[in-house]
Amino acid sequence: MARKADPAVRERILQEAEHIIHLKGYNHACLDEIAEACGMTKGNLIHHYGSKSELALAVLDYKIKEFQSRKVEPVCAQAVPEDAVAEMFAAAGRLFDGNGCKAGCFVGNIALEMSDLDETFRLKVAGFFDEWAAGLSACLERCKAKGYFRPELDARATAESIVALYEGAMMLARSRRDATVFSRVGKVAKQILVQHKTVKQEA
Image (cartoon, rainbow, N blue to C red):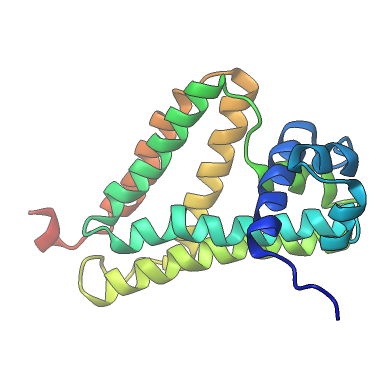
């Protein structure tokens, strides 16, 4: 009987694979290095994930869940969603300031590197951004239903705009080595929401 995979081991593999692929890119990362980082042999790694592409796609799934908890749920839980969006940008600014504005967005990097080369990766990345935008859109729709935002707010377009601003800020910060871009762009993202607040909320 085949031994069941240990979830903790698989999560450690995903974390180490994310770190290495993030720093080196998909094409320059290798299974030997990931296995060494996990403290296992390459054979053991392949037992859990049969190929580098399978592992990288699993990491993308892992990132989708992580982004839901770090980038979507806080907005949904916050009574003032525009402040939660501003904090999302501020947190990225603090992170980038601490790491020298290196690495960038894991999924954005994969999108740039692999979307034109591998359709499976392109679809997975598109699904990631769709999930992120859809989660934010659902939060904004609930706020609109409660009367927080005006009815004319286009929740989907607004959510996609916030995601685009966030990813664009990452690219600018990384290329300029300037984390302050998050503060400026974050103010714009916040203003997009503020301008749609009801008169009652603005008073």
